[in-house]
Image (cartoon, rainbow, N blue to C red; front, top):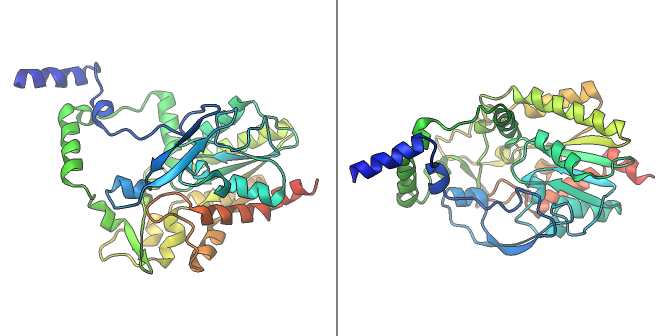
Length: 340
């Protein structure tokens, strides 16, 4: 037995097998790749609640894609407004008519298309748009930059390009993966759940992203703003226009309304909010690229007991998408487009 185990560990160390890939529970890849004319229905769960073993009701979903492989109910060759982003736009937990793309289209009465996949960095989103081959002249491209994980995604994107990303030897061992599997079986509710939750009224809300969304890679703020400048110049050279929407973290919006448990590391709210928002605001002032900050509209809704996030998920609910669509419709770049 010991000899067989040693051979298995040796195979992992030599790169002949990846124990993390074989033994780590897989997350559905739905929405991570462009697959044209997909139509899939099923049930899923709120993400953070599921990660931490919290009880939550299953949620029905339907995921349909257009000819380009993006989640759009209407199959179009192009649109007047393109919304570029990641999972916040994909909105897997919502019927498509509740998404910001569909709600904005109803308000402005101009075709709106979302160009979004799950888990993409802002730089990868630019390449998605290029690869789709969409018409740009006379169109408005609006990119959603999310405070949650865009800094981390940017770092991963750059490290992957340099070949620098590799799990440590300890992380790759069979022994480590067996320990993690045992923890998942014996500790069904993660101990982090209590420290990363709060109460608003009688409802619990979870927070996956806090300092872990920026600590150690604050420098990615400049990397992202530089990428936005280059993409804006590219679009304008092709006859299009560009704007940026800042999507604040769930903690930034709901934190001021929260009752945190004693000892929670989220109680010191300021230390858990990163530099991305301020950096983008300053960059917009210097470059002239329009920036819509959704922090205040979302906070206004939350203060009026219209919480814009699912309780156990990192993504907006239908109210969050409604708030974003309303703010977009009143934003100058969209109002100017409507005037034509």
